[in-house]
Length: 281
Image (cartoon, rainbow, N blue to C red; front, side):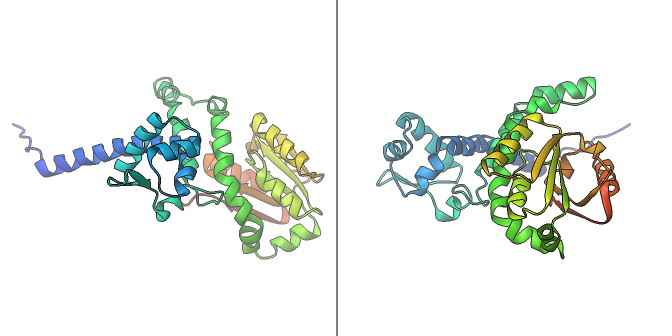
């Protein structure tokens, strides 16, 4: 005869609290995204204000702003002074949700929102096998990735990241053949093309929509040493090869990361260099 031990009441209660916190955080993520999309975080960063004052700053409906403020106050993002009926955005919080700096993490909420919209597709893949086509995630995913990376690379790519690799700046300055795998909207490659006009750069991505944005930006910047080709980077061209190959936040997205890395190795010339930036998670 098999006996089942009684559930641990304390463990059960702790898990319920964890679930509540998880669901509350999910709701708060939506509110963070709403504040980002409507400009409310920037309005709050200007200084304390009532719901009416904040709505006026952001040119929004006071009634809706008031409800949103209630949510982000209960969520611990904003503080409320009942005596003056004003809301305050602590500078320690505002630092991470406002401004053009790469430290503005508000756009990450948009990434979560976009992925959530495809849950039905993912559930279908669980039932039927296969996967969800990348096009199903466009243009939202393309836009989110561009927004999340743009400020970071504007500030850090040429001044911090590239000098961290010995000899890389010298190579790029003299002029070498460069590839960027999974280049997306091509902002990193355009930044390098502008900084190193003697080098010849090509970006590869399978999203034609993203590459259209990359080409448009290159044209606006007046760049003549960069181009963008639609390609599956598992079949990266290996002849005549490249002197330097970059991968910015792209390898972890590949269906076959090891296969792509192997192809990159084949495409590098004998003294070639591979430079990868990716998430530490």
